[in-house]
Amino acid sequence: MGEQTMPPELAAAFAELTANALARQARSARLSLPTPAANSVTVYPPTTGGPFTTIQAAINSITGQGPQNEYSVVAGPGTYNESITMIPWITVHGSGSDKTTLAGGVTAASSSALQSMTISTVSSPYSVSVV
Image 1 (cartoon, helix red, strand yellow):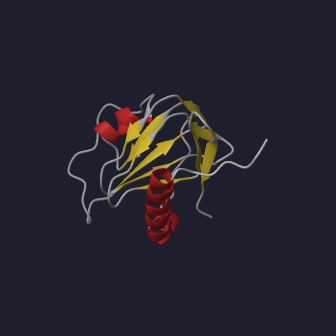
Image 2 (spheres, one colour):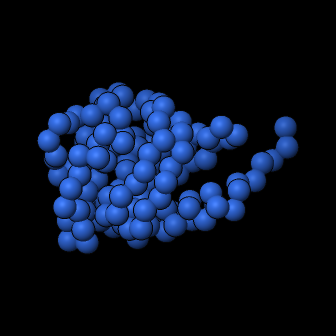
């Protein structure tokens, strides 16, 4: 099987998400976010309605986010069969690129980030990790 290349628009979106993730790495290192149960998603600071069974439901529960009020969405181990639309000032954390898979697309937003999960598209998987 030959090596596949990422389409330019997907590469640009991933580059922005990676840059945002690296910019938030120091903040994330200070957070002590517990790992949710398998196939469960939580939001920090907590919002109403959680824990959630989809990443998008968790994202949709967030209101009032901004530069001084950032949120973290933490997905437990498992495969999430959904496409998500990010919103500004949130970071979606997986439980590790070997434990959390988003099987669907991602629509990026400014000042948002994805960390520690594998994104599996129709053609091939892409891993997003911040060490």
